[in-house]
Image 1 (cartoon, one colour):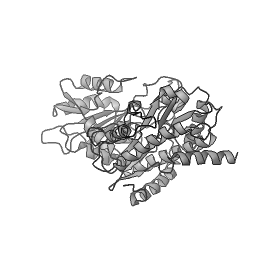
Image 2 (image 1 turned 90 degrees about the horizontal axis):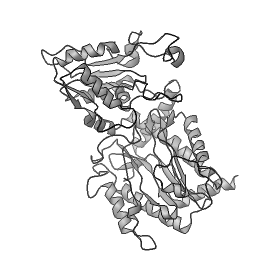
Image 3 (image 1 turned 60 degrees about the vertical axis):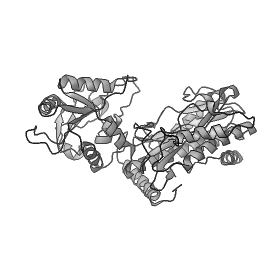
Image 4 (image 1 turned 180 degrees about the vertical axis):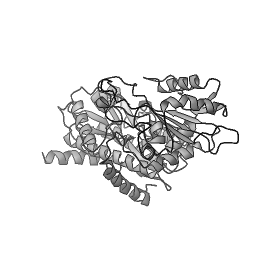
Length: 456
């Protein structure tokens, strides 16, 4: 059931407007929510855990390039709202059993401020930071106890005398790029040898899957700016443009609206490039007769949009392009019809993924060909602080979850790929299309492009 006009939808719109107003006064890559929001998340995570939880923020050394901008580790930010490098969160069980170490329930550890003007990592070069001894640091951070990072090792040693298990985020395998989680676990083992390290990520990631209304407001703002960017791309689209020019226009709209960065590398692929799932080179000229896949979303306040539309370069789908487009749209509508609390993305015979596969199996093209083999990816994933938010995709959907809906068909021998992707909020009665303002049908897309040409 599509609950597009539900009270929850109206609250989201109101909260999005409030988020924009609040954001105007915040000089941060992410628009921080009230301290109570983060405190509630920590309290929920702490419930039922039999040992301390230690979460490491990014150090600022993950990317040494001159163009790098610091963005916090998502789970650390989710629990603290702290967006500066080198910090660590400690959350201890509450209340402590008799005989256990008398440790504050929550501690935020911060590095010292670097005031030396000759230090290239100092505040003269990178701007003021929050230090552990700053006046009002408790009110700013929302932590009653803020300590220097140098105290972490001693506090962990005290806890190790009472607790035999410490929880942190453990990498599921080899990490791509800088091994933050691997390094964090190694640091923890070095500080408290002999203590069992357990993975908190299943509980933490499951919690992150269900969004608060404040999170939904930021997600809706990311979607709204990304929708505006897709409208602009449709209106400017024509043969002779280069893929990077379309992406540049979309990124401009995101950044002018307050997005600190793209949610992922923009994908604008024309012709054969439309069949490359994560195409990011963007250096080809768009030709007459091409289909153009535009998978582009901004990140607002730390929260990601993930939207894809496929358009004809010249404004008109050929009969074959229209046939494939309508098959993908039909598959998306079939999956949306089953989207509600209790449904699953993967893992069951009636999962959203299986619904799309069954649709393609039961709907051959006009040539009698089953096109299922041209659908190589999943139909959905969770969206939040990460564009592919972590968590079990076989978990039944619940109100407050936000997922993508993105079937596609990619036929390299015809230089033709089609993907249609929307962001979907699970509601009590079904779902709301957070990207519903952006048309999905071929007729609507052709009309938008034709109207734009008529007003040139």
